[in-house]
Length: 121
Picture 1 (tube, one colour):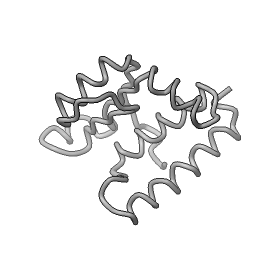
Picture 2 (cartoon, helix red, strand yellow):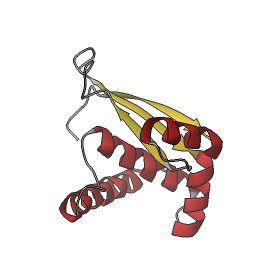
Picture 3 (cartoon, helix red, strand yellow):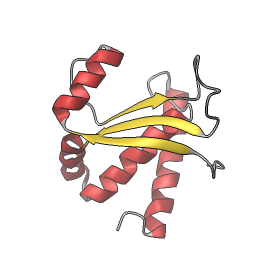
Picture 4 (cartoon, helix red, strand yellow):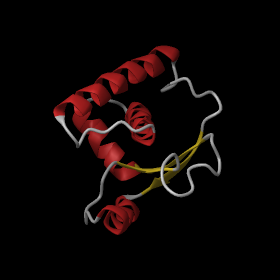
């Protein structure tokens, strides 16, 4: 993505923990697969120019989704990290069809690169 100095934090949680965060920060009282909290926007965005933000991933949801998608658990986790990073970089899929398509295309491209490089082994 052209950001060799970029940093992020990654927190792996269960469904209960991610549901609490989803409710607290987005008003959605249900578990989700990944939450992304950007540090590249807002009041404190200039504090650390290389800090992308925080990703929170539910391992329980990732396991369920891996079974549904035919991916192994590590591949699903890799996909969710990519998905979250794209959100931290400003990609969105809930705004409109064009944005969703752009995000899906970039996500597939990055996922293929990860698989080809052996990162999900």
